[in-house]
Length: 345
Image 1: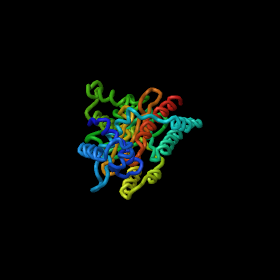
Image 2: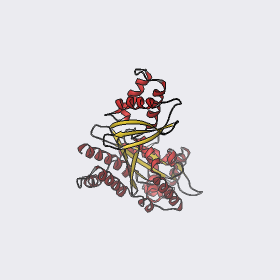
Image 3: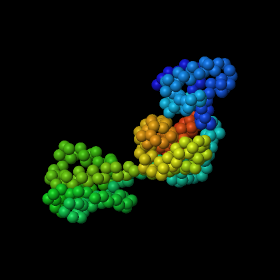
Image 4: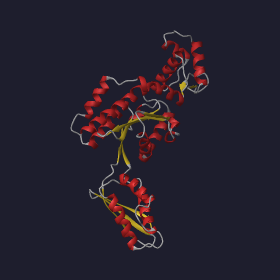
């Protein structure tokens, strides 16, 4: 992180503010007026040149003012993480909307997405991890000499099927033994809870399984890895992204964001990564591979259940000109409210 003196940071702040409001570059004369003519235009130009050398500003064309680079936005936004706060009006609105009625969990999460969208004038996002269910039974049924159908049944009666390759020389007794072995260890547990114990048991050869049965068991565990870990994504307010468009370049970027939102699995992957972090996460432009060719920013924060475990994330996605000073505390506060409401359910 580059260190700036107060004068340089103040000039950067004004340029970022102008960019967020209008998308237009700011020149030294306008900056001098904003600063109450406490600095000369020449002094301001020298400071802007230094900020440009540091990679925090750039000039879109000759004789133009300056705009913040993605690095400049990140530098400025990091400072906001410690100092910005949410207005009382926004706090009350978030609380009232989320506690307006006795909402089901699904309706609550949808309402949170809509609230974030409305307040930020961008798109509001909520990730909902698919809850892992308690297992009741697993069974392997041979389809042909090379393949079997692995059937997993939950206590709620849900059934999921996967195809698994079989080793050469297997027999029906091999499949029965593999089915009995896994069912005995999975029944009454989630797959992720039981998998590590089974893996350790296999590694230490605590259970005497023949080579073919062991191979079927390991193949069965492998094809089910990731089961129950998929997530769904609630998105509200895509149309809001069009309201901030000032230039044709921004319109093209918004179109790219629409395409990105349609491929929800991409965002789910990114939001899933954010759930492993602590507090608000901010992704600006090419900082993340997902946005490398899309001029947008994503601000998100995880929310927790009553046990204090992270179970999802809320966020706002928009152009790089979103109002960071308002959006960052908004997302952070909403995640805290959602955590509390989920704990009370």
